[in-house]
Image (cartoon, rainbow, N blue to C red; front, side, top):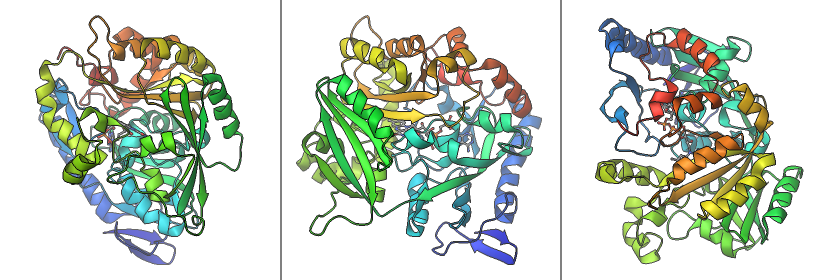
Amino acid sequence: MDAATTGSGTTPVSSTATQAPAPAPAGRFPEHDARVARIAADLRARASAGAAGGAPMSLGKAAVSHFVPNPHDPRHKDKKLDVRALREVLAFDPAARTMTAEPGVTFVELVKRTLPFGLIPKLVPELETITIGGAVSGCSVESMSYKYGGFHDSCLEYEALSTSGEVVRCSRTQEPELFDMLHGSYGTLGILTALTFELIPAQPYVHLEYVRHARFEDFEAALDAAQRDPGVDFIDGIIHAPDELVLCLGRFAEAPPAGVRPSNYRFLDIFYKSTRTRSEDWLTTPDYLFRYDTECHWLTRTLPGLERRPVRLVLGKLLLGSTRLLTWSRRLAPLLKFKRKPEVVVDVFIPGKRLRDFWDWYVKTVDFWPLWVVPYRLPRPYPWVAPAQAAQGGGYYVDCAIYGKRNDTPGVDYSQALEEKTYELGGIKTLISQNLYTRERFWQIYDRTVYQRIKQRMDPAGVLRDLYDKFNFKKA
Ligand SMILES: Cc1cc2nc3c(=O)[nH]c(=O)nc-3n(C[C@H](O)[C@H](O)[C@H](O)COP(=O)(O)OP(=O)(O)OC[C@H]3O[C@@H](n4cnc5c(N)ncnc54)[C@H](O)[C@@H]3O)c2cc1C
């Protein structure tokens, strides 16, 4: 339990409290401070033992990682820095719509805490156990990204540890470059230990409308128009085939109409398939936010039979849900050691103005469905993107997520082809799976100068891997 200090006294807070505590300025949480001090001491002990000399370090979190498991990932052998204790909500102010929490808090826990107060985070990634620290350090994108960008765009302040054990606080006004660079740094520029972020009003249900198009140009026009409609709260698209493009529009609601029962896609029924047949749907807000969790989008398709009801009845409790699916694939990853090219699992951010070019190429070259598309607008420029690449994006992207394409065609590596096309169109590939870019190309996309400046500030001895090295382990 931690303490949130108010002007009039001290309010205890724990992850399970039901009453909202008052807000507290960062750094006023003794139990949190003690947890951070223990991690700082561990970092200092490693530094004095010379761990920086040759043994890179990675984080040991409590929640499952959402990086695509890869048997060649050298991090399997790293000595972990134990950050499992950092998983408490520290302060919650419903009136100001802000929360301060440790990085290991998962989005499913957050929504449970905030929704009873009619609030949710501005961006909720749709896999339940993505953590707030992971969402800032990596990437986050969902159907509110067209309004709010990623989760980090709603953050007001970070507390972080440098690898020498120094506690640093940063915000848009205090060390703003560090604040911006912690986003998308994938744990290579220090360790986040607390985050303060904004919340937005929410209602208990979401009404979904599915608008079907047979031609890309109609879908694209509808996608653009929906973003100008103030009545819409959530926008994404599921493209089931080149002539079956479904725009999914969500709107908050207090309740479904009398006699309508909300759907449930947590066990036997499959959400993404429902968008092929239905024209509308009702879900509770948590079920909407985590609608892709049961199948981990549609990765259950890669496990024979798991989309069939009898199999789900027997094995569903063991296998369904992103946490279980990722845990199993991590356990089984060593079996894939001899597979030449892993399945394609990647999100690529394509500049909105080049979406048509990407589409024409994708239909001809990749031809894998469903393709998940999510409009994403940067509220502010991201300084980690190299200026020339950022200029091509123009601040508006469409995230195209390719989850589970088999990559066994001789002579073609679809992961590499997608990377190259993304670069050519001025886009950005997120680092949720192995990276295949050359070092030179990689640093044409990411801004090396700013990165090195912050690396020097937070990890001068290189205890944490460099961003390029962390994800390029093809031949390790
Ligand atoms: C199949 C699949 C589907 C996905 N779908 C979505 C989606 O729909 N929406 C979405 O937003 N995202 C999605 N993601 C991406 C996911 O949000 C990111 O990979 C995110 O970074 C995962 O966070 P995590 O909490 O699991 O952290 P991890 O995967 O454990 O870590 C991610 C990175 O953050 C770093 N990190 C974690 N904690 C800290 C910390 N405290 N301090 C410093 N660095 C830290 C780690 O070192 C690592 O490099 C998907 C990923 C996969 C594989």
